[in-house]
Image (cartoon, rainbow, N blue to C red; front, side):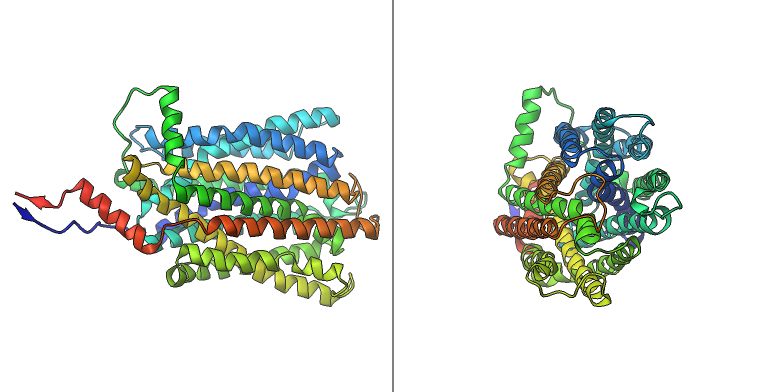
Length: 486
């Protein structure tokens, strides 16, 4: 018997055009998340006149109902057997229904009272989120299948998050600069209903286009992706037993909780962002659009920085260090104002200070998100060694689940902050007392700092490094192709 060394695993690295196509798919999530996180609470509360707590309740109900679908879709896409592979049938099927539902979110039927709008909001957001799950979970799972390379995964997810931010920012800039314009009858652009309705159309078209490019651009890889496991007789109990076995992975638990707190903070920041910019700083829509356009630079910086940091520091260490900087810088200007250390509202100095801090801080936040997303993909091989199953869909479904739940909690927290600050529906900048603005600032800053420190703490328990990932790939190669010859 002659013994030979374990085979070196062959690792495919997707080309530039594939990374672009896969990345463009992130624009769909960027547009949808931007609208739901930044504007939906504002639109239905301040513009349509539902109380902020009622809107937050409707959105949270939709999140809870939708979250149940994530592990089911993830497991389904891990095990389905079709001529078009495991992931693409879901992506194609979700494309048009998601676009239509998103359009209707911003174009509710006329004549509805507050109760009718509440029911509509619950129903339509459930529909949007379910359709989005059918696209996003299988689409994200592709990242772990397109490449097993440690650094290539960072690059792939960097493109994904770059286009997610660019897509969300582009539609936000269009909304603020082109659509929400004052008219003879509407003095403040935020209350321009026609602008919101047109935004719904533009955003829906962008979502459909992004999904189409991602699906078609990765379609040729279907024969090279991981095949579904052999058909089995499965019971409901067996399905959920395998799901729970998969997500019991220690690194996944650490990343799951870190993502929970990170997205909880993002949900608070996103929901309160327009209030901080419009009420706390007193910026007009053109200035807010300028801040948003500055974040285009942030996304570009992150696209370059994330792969470099991942290579030099490793994903875990890089995410912890950059995350600490990112989430302490974010509330710094607000705290400085509360202590009387910022220029007065209405001055150019204030605006440019906030602009520079925003560009740098958002770049660091995006880098952290890119690194953490790539860390999810690396759990797949460790889990496969332990369970014998490829479970990309379940892992990314878990992150999708916690994204929705934590953002819902962020929206609820934001609603509490607004209630404590006594910011009522219909109020406009200039009508809010200084004491209310102080409470808004303290609620925003303290909640972000506390929650983000919890994120960093949980992230410290993630255990996969570059070296352990390479060992996992080698072990899988040896298991599939034993290193002995007669």
